[in-house]
Image (cartoon, rainbow, N blue to C red; front, side, top):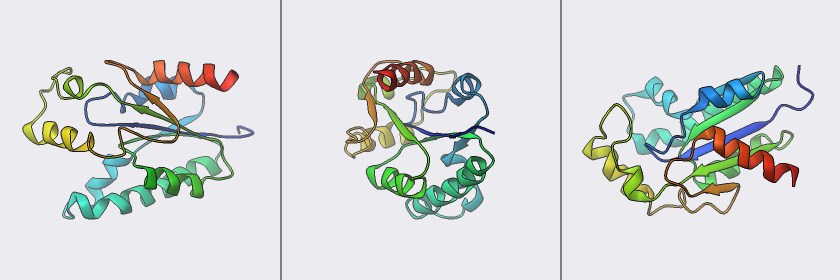
Length: 162
């Protein structure tokens, strides 16, 4: 068991690379990934606006179980300040680090993967650029065209050592 498991929040909008958790989880030993969006499927009948808070709470409960077993936890989601504050309060006894991936909006709205973005996804990205998701006043904000989680982690590790 790890002496001090840690919590890493990878925040980002749709199409910004925030779900590239596999390389990150391979890089950090004994790491579990909690993808908050997956929890929406448990209450698929509920509107997105209504299930956001319950999904954060459920993700925190799942993460708590992993942490109690000595595993690191990586969250991926579009975190707002209130979500981060909630996690900070829930995990105050664990180191908590956050990286927000924020490419320019036109890059985020471009078709960069194998699947083209839907009109709804492009509109959702534009909406998120009006929120505190892209202007967080916590953690580390990475403004780049194609920041990967591994690159973000490398930058975080450099800052942590400094």
